[in-house]
Image (cartoon, rainbow, N blue to C red):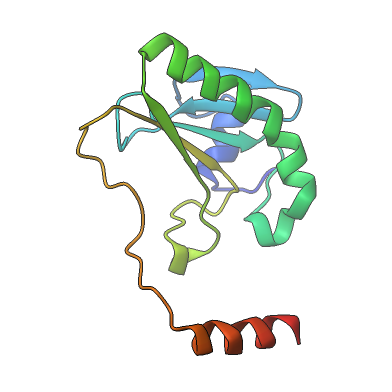
Length: 136
């Protein structure tokens, strides 16, 4: 199942150029063309799934083995000190291509890549209210 005009579907079908570094049942991994670090790779399901909210546990199950395999490849072959794994669902979260994908970003000590998101500690009463809202 593919989506017309989806660049990741085109890569999966061999219709668009990509630097593929791994594949498995139902998933493909390739280098990101605008990397955060050397070796930044994406793992995508071969079937078109817009995002995690549409694919759920099924899409995670499909990509997980290749995510692990490629993570080990990147750290092992590039000598990285660590690796960031992230996934964005929806434009507001920074998703640019509406096809589920997992980012694997090799990291080295002192590489200057932003480590994560800005954090803002919450007061206990705010956490309590949020907790109550989430549990309904």
